[in-house]
Length: 457
Ligand SMILES: Cc1ncc(COP(=O)(O)O)c(C=O)c1O
Image 1 (cartoon, helix red, strand yellow):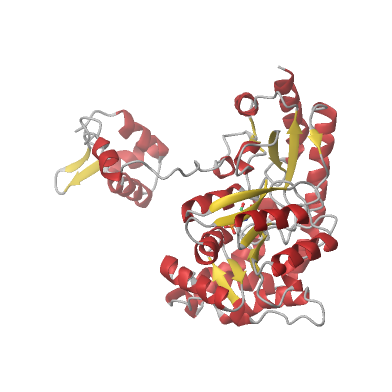
Image 2 (tube, helix red, strand yellow; image 1 turned 90 degrees about the horizontal axis):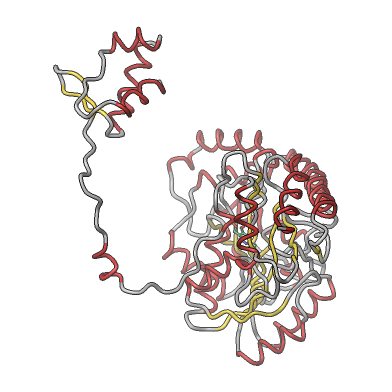
């Protein structure tokens, strides 16, 4: 009934909406469809029904623009929070979206997710609350995932060490609040995930950048930063880091773990891309620690579905208790429907075959984008081809005005993310992050052509 909506939009306030009979004749719709359409317009305040009289187009209520200026006086100056990042922006119609952080639908286990949600809707969880730390079976699954990577001689995590989260973003906030605290220093790789920078700003945590790149951070630099600042925690992504795609070697993981242990500190390990290995498997550092030094975050949001937003933090000892206390204050518990659906998906045999197929899809996309850049953007420098994850981290000539490049490309239908958002301090160069998990990979060569042209301008 788009025609009726269009008619209402151009009709003067107070105009009488034609009778149901007239609308049926005009639009060839059934009486139920017409009544539903009028009901929707009424619920949106566009028309009003006067019983016994008829239905009328409503006058626009606002006669002057509202003035919210008083709020600035009441709220005073804001604490400086960075603006929401580019990857959260939707895709403009028909644009090629290399900016986004979330995989497109074709990369998700759609059939498993739909069936799991339908089953969860019929189960008791649809009408009940959940434990603060999450459903016991899901906690056991997360613990077991990490236990599978745990070497013999190291005590694997137990289900009680697991706290289920509504996405790992809120786990970052809780971890920073509970284990670092307001005004205290936190070491982070530079560049690092913009959402971690945001969560730290919100928690009032002071970031201390440690340079990192295709090979991960230098453990001596990590040690120096700990010693100079007195920090007690280091946030890092040892597997397929966002944005660089770096994966730490087992040797580097061991050395960083030694640094952390020697200082009685924590490694906050964000294993966001665990399911997105391409040339390798993710190797959680947490699997090598049973003394509670590694606080491990594992998300299913991007691999199961952005709508089944479930993640977990695995922490041991008092650190775990503090995270639980923070979660209780923050949100009490995660919807049991989403937890049950996530568990259902990852427990199906088809989940493993989905992950195997995904690896091939991601490899084809990554390689196509790498080849397209090599052909059409010769000035772009890729320090390495990432062995996993969803992104290429591309360095551009130093004189590049990256914001302008992003605007120019967007005007030609290609959306990119400017690299500055991933730096906790000044950017160390001109970068863009290109995500290869968005829709229409066939158009990657076109996108690269646009970037190449804009860069030459
Ligand atoms: C490195 C990293 N950590 C955490 C998150 C947050 O993920 P979630 O959707 O689980 O909150 C993201 C999302 O982009 C990410 O890239």
